[in-house]
Amino acid sequence: MLRKIYALIFAATGILFSGIFSFPADANFSSLKCDMIVESPQIGRSEGRLFMKGDKSRIELNASGIQTVTIVNDQNAYMYMPAQNVAMTMALSQAKGQVPEITDYKKDCEYINDEQVDGEQCGVYRCSKGGQSTTMWIPANLDFPLKVVSGATTTYYKNVNVNVDLDDSLFSLPQGVQYQDVSGLMQGLKGFKGGN
Image 1 (cartoon, rainbow, N blue to C red):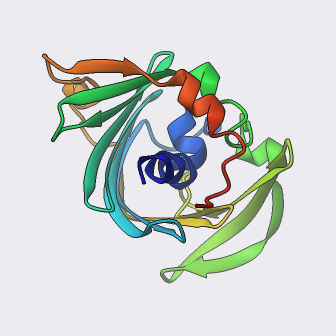
Image 2 (spheres, one colour; image 1 turned 90 degrees about the horizontal axis):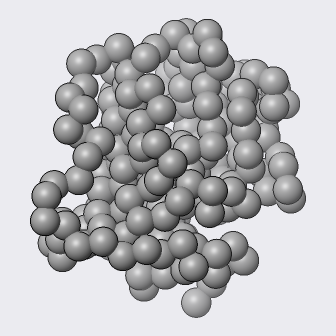
């Protein structure tokens, strides 16, 4: 089950979690917070929250009853499990290959058409690199997706608030956390497709 949760987190947060997606240089926000809903055939529906500030991000996700906090800052990603007070660390370079590498969706993705998500008109962009495909629904007034489909996992972002004041402590782990390096395990997940 833990292996499936790791895979879900990669699929659910997709490009955002890996830290290898960057919004256009002219993106119309510097910070953001929102709710997120993840639907995956592996472990069903999960809910959480996303916070972004510059190149840093924090995702709080409850997957199959396990609460995780994923923080991306500098060159590392941390998956923190509050109940166990354990943080698993991974270099962002290890995330490459898990999702398509996209530096700017306006340049690297193909515009498909316009569709509505929760009543909001969005441009649909498909990004395919390295045999992997991700589709994003991005509204005209915001350089941030309201919906992302990566493989069999769909993530919805709701109640998006931009240019909000976020304390830097959100992107740090509490003191006393026990660290484990899982870079090797993530390499093993490269071929994981959500099976048993």
